[in-house]
Amino acid sequence: MLAFLQSLLQMVWKTVTDQPSPKSLFLSHVPEEWRPLVSAFLSVLPIVMVFPMLFALTTVVERKGLGRIQNRPGPNRVGPAGFLQFAADGIKAIIKEDVVPRAADRVVHFIAPLVLVVPVLLSYSVLPFGRNLVPIDLDTGLLFFFAVGAVTELAVFMAGWSSRNKYSLLGATRAIAQMISYEIPLILSALTVVMVVGTLSLPAIAEAQGPAPGGWLCRWHFFTPWGFAGFWLFLVAACAEANRSPFDLPEGESEIIAGYYLEYSGFKFALFFLGEYLGLFAASGLGITLFLGGWHAPFAFLEGWIPGWVWFLGKLVALILLFIWVRGTLPRVRMDQLMNFAWKFMLPLTLVNMLGAGLWHFLTNPIARWGLPAVLIGGAYVVLGRGLMPRSRVGPRVYRYAD
View 1 (tube, rainbow, N blue to C red):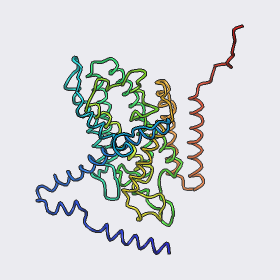
View 2 (cartoon, one colour; view 1 turned 135 degrees about the vertical axis):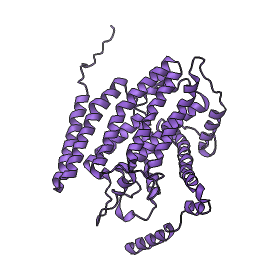
View 3 (cartoon, rainbow, N blue to C red; view 1 turned 90 degrees about the vertical axis):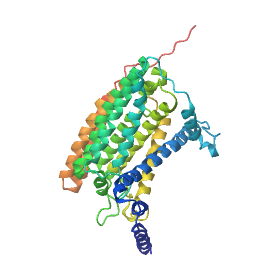
View 4 (tube, rainbow, N blue to C red; view 1 turned 180 degrees about the horizontal axis):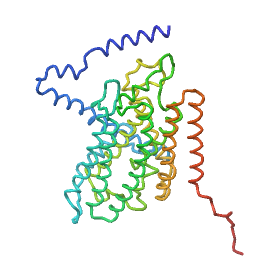
């Protein structure tokens, strides 16, 4: 009965999906010479509409979630249950006065937020949101993603330097040091997937994690020893790249006021805020594509029942909630702890994980294929973790009371 129901649903879904897409129907009424431009516009339009709206909703969900964690109500005045707070914040940012320091480089100060947001939006163009749902299918899509993402460090430096403020420049310097330090393990953790799959095309990487022939489980890389470790390494590095807690040192209010965008107000500040969240969403989407099967379901019998873009969006929402939970749970680390963690733990462990991926690729015995990478990566995790933790030289506390 279950097999019959599944085959019936798959037949209905195939009938529906075989129909021409709305985009194809619309382009059939457009003159031939205008079709490439209109097609590009229709591909860009969902990105610039869906993800900024997801950012707006995330700000409300995050504030309400953090309020629940910290035993306070959170926003609850504007709209039903406070869920229109993002609209009030957006209107406030638009109408607020744009204050520029007298000694600032006005041109660089103006374009720095745009330089941060535009490359992040470009990175979405190579993410496969579902089967045949990728705006630009590049053979080197992963390389393109990291190439455009590297521009964000330039935007951060532009913002800090052009403000002519020592706190802004210090915040920019700290942010660049942090972003460069964690970008290396971010790329190396993604490189393990390239080693195993043998391609830089993101749709091909997602397609390789589909259902195994005759198996009940999809071949997500997360279900392998190197993929499990690589996913968490990628997630931690992405969190640090986005300046998220507990790695939000560039914006440490108790130390350098507000970091590199201290001298920004109004809509320019909102653009920095938007760029950070969109960068986090893009990195999460890349992690889903590399390790969590992209648009594929976790189990083979679920394939075809739910559209692939729904699976992708569900995984993205789950990762966003995880980042919110981490922000409300972990305290901010110190700068020396941040850099030590990147260079003494993350970087060596990603290199060991690459070795584990190589063993997985070349070994044929199932026991050795699973056991050797797991022992190697697990042993490196324990050794590096113990080496990173300094030995405490603080003796037992002694209380003395006045006579």
